[in-house]
Image 1 (cartoon, rainbow, N blue to C red):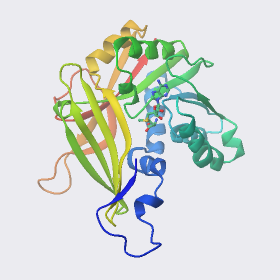
Image 2 (cartoon, rainbow, N blue to C red):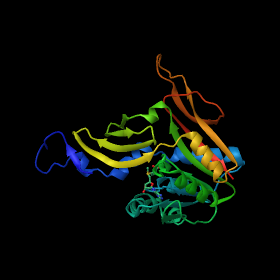
Image 3 (tube, rainbow, N blue to C red):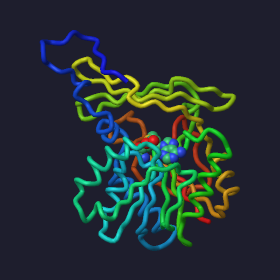
Image 4 (cartoon, rainbow, N blue to C red):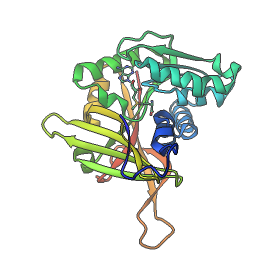
Length: 284
Ligand SMILES: C[S@@+](CC[C@H](N)C(=O)[O-])C[C@H]1O[C@@H](n2cnc3c(N)ncnc32)[C@H](O)[C@@H]1O
């Protein structure tokens, strides 16, 4: 991944925006909303268990932004963050965990390990967000993650993951989003093979000065479908599986598309949309 510019530099010594950028910081601002994710986890657990969850294991934690917010949200809360990548965990320790202060940091435990093998004390919640499990490319691996999660939960514990689908999920796509006028986040699903659902995905960041971090992050994914996920959860020992579907409402402007309310409701049937996101909560 190299900073590139379509324009000439404006003068000697003037750094391009892409050269000054930190891809982890850009990623966090583009695709993570830890306050909303903590509220979502709390809400799902309360609805199914009638109490607030206290211990979280964030699998595929990356920079542990969610684990840090989890512990910030309640002084009784603890978090374990699990990720394979030492550098990403170290970035998270320096930029998220330590800046949260000693007391909060003391309740966060970062583990460099494979989520398929890691062994941890039982927790109320294991979660894996931003569709990271799509990096597990075969049934045996996804099932093994589910089995690992199942064996890492307290009696009332839940595994929570997010899932995306709809016809657009099974196609090539390039979507752009402006982030506070400072840069453009680009999600590219560059290829999709209908035979094995393998997809090549990239994240690019583009800046107003014409510079860009192309392929700041790249993923070789298998786009798992919701029925496959539900079947594998059941095979892995989860006896109750709940799907919470994003709720939409009419926009304020005439002709505006439906807008997300940010609420998710448990459903057994949903409209077949071009693009959708849901949360799956599974209990043993
Ligand atoms: C898409 S990022 C997700 C970061 C963050 N959790 C989020 O919600 O945006 C996926 C992360 O999963 C990690 N990862 C991929 N396979 C893994 C595995 N088998 N075990 C642990 N971590 C893994 C990668 O190192 C990467 O940091």
